[in-house]
Length: 103
Image 1 (cartoon, rainbow, N blue to C red):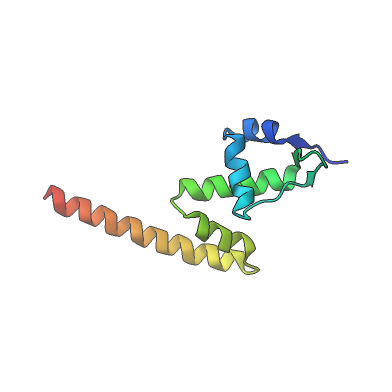
Image 2: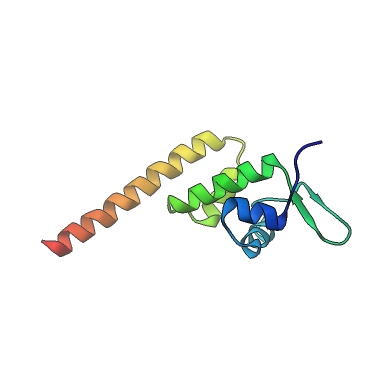
């Protein structure tokens, strides 16, 4: 049997709130590995890895909508490459705007 984490343990491990994990579940970004009849959620390594990916992509500036597309896409690597290029170009535009304002 795999190691299971309660929602509180998973939140602590990922340094987010339990509310964040519930929100991601509502947005269909991640599902607990197991939910007991009383509603207690349990996460396993696969879900923890997926949550780490979600948090990493958020740090890079991706929207939850973009992240959901990536997670659900069968061609995830190709989509990720395209989204990374778009994000890079968007960041470049923002940097150019800042440079123009400073000049």
